[in-house]
Image 1 (cartoon, rainbow, N blue to C red):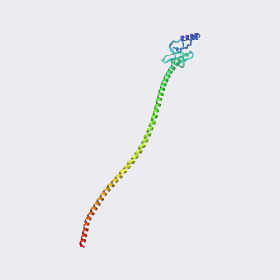
Image 2 (cartoon, rainbow, N blue to C red):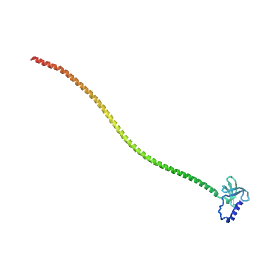
Image 3 (cartoon, rainbow, N blue to C red):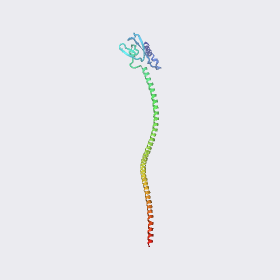
Image 4 (cartoon, rainbow, N blue to C red):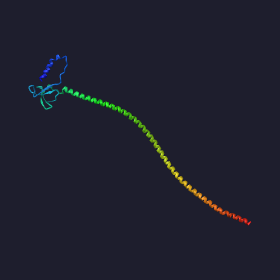
Length: 222
């Protein structure tokens, strides 16, 4: 502690001689923790700047504060050397660490942004291809619909033609049956005509000789 005071006094005395060179006071500082409130008490340990302490008691009359370290050691330190915020060196280190983390995160985000841009470009190309493919599929679908419509019309015509064919086949069967009937009737008629002719021939064959015989008999009587 005496060394610290001596350093301050020497710095004040030689301030005028050091105007040609600029310097800054170091943030590194050690303070004493004593067993009581005053310099007459023994030093229990040295505390570096930035050491976290828990305040147990503050004596404004003596200017000392009763504190406890994280390790459980307690003692008295000068109140004027205590701050409610961490040391500037620690804050700077924390800020630098946070800045480094932010810079790393920023680089990651930039890399991710580049990847997203590339992905967007690929997606845009794929979207163009998909749009072209969609138009082609739409055209093919329209053609299929037209073909299907034509197929349905052809199927309907085929069904109608099949119905007509069936009707014609039935008519043909009826005509064939009628034709067979006509053939049978014609044959029967011809048979009857032939039988009549034969019968007529027999009759004529029987009648003509008698007529001749009668004529001859009548001639004989003259």
